[in-house]
Image (cartoon, rainbow, N blue to C red; front, top):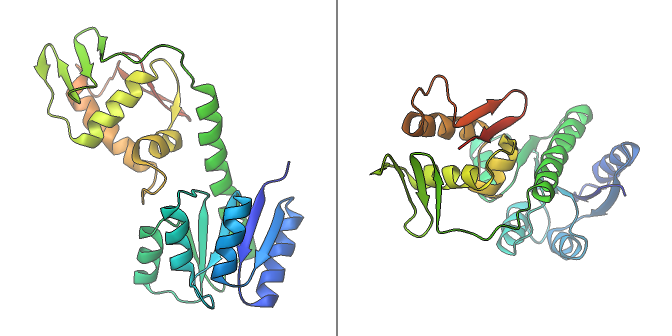
Length: 237
């Protein structure tokens, strides 16, 4: 079944051009020209991706995106704008947009960005399907000299508490809960940081480096949190 893209653009010629080019790529395309209609269609269809003009009549793209995120609709959002001010890009990303394209833009570039966002979503969805465990949740997880306590939200090494930042603890627990499974950076980012996080997968690399300094005997040659070439990370315990 083809993926559905909702194009929200009030300029008829651009709306038609976007729809035509996306349909050529095999996508199902729905269109509308104002913010209020965009909210109604997005709620009804839950499209796989939203191309959202920032300057719309009635309700602008920023308010549309904020409303969708507030209501828990987390499809990727690529915002389109005729302005190139840095503050516009920052605001767009802070309210939950996943990417930002300034007009005029290359159709080839836009299609590439659409495909990249859809691939990221598909990766996360596939890994969620793969990673299902029937084992009951335990209060504590132990891996040799490393212990993680869910109730107290702390970890210890050789019975000595580790000084972990909240995000470091969440990342370590997530790895431990999926011991032995390859986890892509994108999947970790979505599951630990959340859909609303403004950043990229390099954030995961930085936190993994910090964690290794605390849980590995030799952080330069890790045996607990290992790198999977071209994939992501795997927790060996």
